[in-house]
Length: 240
View 1 (tube, rainbow, N blue to C red):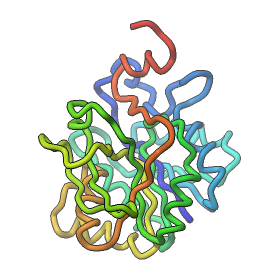
View 2: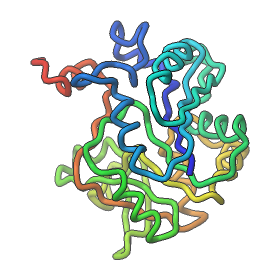
View 3: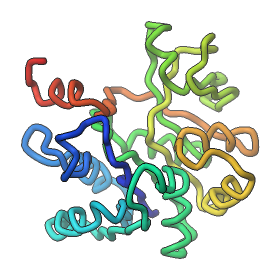
């Protein structure tokens, strides 16, 4: 199994913190945000980790990778700004093509901090034998409208998946942690060749579940998208 950590964003909403430091390398409670993801991947049968970043922050991640004990390869996607970025799905397809692998795959957003055990999602993936999403149940309907929302059957199979619905069909919000089968790797290129959105990683499973069975794991924990300075300070225990 291969792992891709998406880290090619420019995080302009978090300037000046991220003007010269990529968001996944910001310190969070004593270590970099991405280090928490690496710790989780260490519990999976992953034989290689690809961190996909941009030209601006490539050297930053190369320096960071020198101290990582797991096999990590940093990939420069060749972009330099928000204007010419490949997008999250584009970066997954780029990594697959660049390294030429055809293997099972776990894809994780590099700026997410989560407390659930990634091994539990992996176990669901193994049990179902299908591509597997990660979700959290919310009671607040207004809050869930900010997420992609999945409707599942009694076995956890995705029946419907909609991004930011005004009328959610369930209370299960989907986060950016995905397990994909070996056969799914080639479908990233197919998705892009059909002219679909290359930017939002969540758009790919919305396309995928209509073509093959996709399941979801309901997390026992929390997941935080560190997308603003306010959220970052809150996660670090700083009063805002």
